[in-house]
Structures are given as structure tokens and as C-alpha cells.
Image (tube, rainbow, N blue to C red; front, top):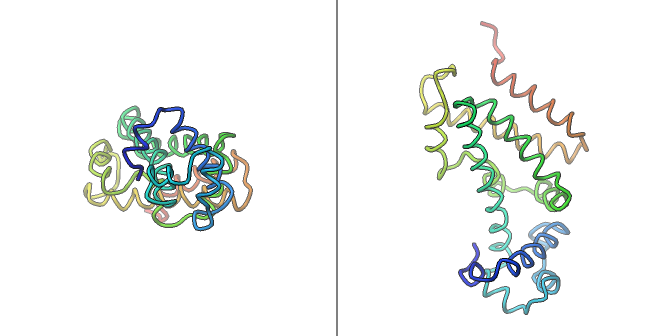
Length: 199
């Protein structure tokens, strides 16, 4: 991630560098990105970039982590606000993510990220992974769920988040409207909620 020298920079300079990096990561996938474009756009020496980050990948994941942290925080807020209702909290989170990725300033950046998504980035965009799982589990009310224990809840979270990520990626590939995108996600969440077998 970012080196301390980057974190010690004045806020405006950090923002300029991040904006320049996002512009490059909006243009091409990480594997094709160039440090030279970032430093030119940010008006910094090439050597300074390496004082701030180990490499391009380091810079890329630093930016993604900032968004990932906000997504996790939002889900925990939703769970608290909704008295542990997992499905409602994820539905609200989905709309929050759509708002974030549809923001004019971020649109091309996120489109490029989601269309070139790898497993590591996907896991960063979903709240359910090691460092946040126990906190999440403690906020979810399992008394309303048809599961034997909190251990099973991890699998449910994986399913919900897989559906969420799949829908975001499909929205780019199919050029879906926002309303259609939300409608599909809510229908899939309803299927998870009701199950697929008759009682």
C-alpha cells in the first residue's frame, strides 16, 4: 500500500496524485497502466512516485482499499440501522455501490475496474472477508434466518456478495439501466430469501 512519505504529503497533493492515478486506471487495465502517465498528469518527478508507492500495483490497491473501507463501513451502518436485517442491509449497500460507481467523477474508473476484475479486487469490493467477518456476524440477527448457526452465515454472505458482484459486472456488459439493475438484484435476493424448494 502507500508508503508513509505519501501519507505525510499535504492533502491537496495526495488528492492530485490519486486523481492522476485514477485517470490512468480509467484508461487501461492495471497490467497496461504506465507510471509515466501518472507522474506527467500529477506534475511530479518519476522518482517521487516510487517514494510514495512500491509500484503501480501498490498504487492501484491503495485506491481500491479506500473504496473497500467505505463499503465495509456502510454495510455495518446498515446492519446497525436495520436491526441486523441482512437482506435489507445488502439491498441498501447495493444502491450505495451503484451511486458510488455511477458518480460522474468515478464512472470510467469503476467501469474499467469491474470489466477487468480479478479475484483479489472482487474480494476487496465485498465486505465479507477475514478482517471484517466476525464484526459482521455479531451484528446480524440470525433468529430470523433458517440456518443452524452463525458458522453457516458465512456461506450465505458469500452467496449474496457473489450475486451482488455478478450484477454489477453484468450491468456494464449488458448496458442495463439503473432501475433494471436494481430490479434484477432485488429479484435474486428474494430467491435467496425464499429458497427454491417448495416446503
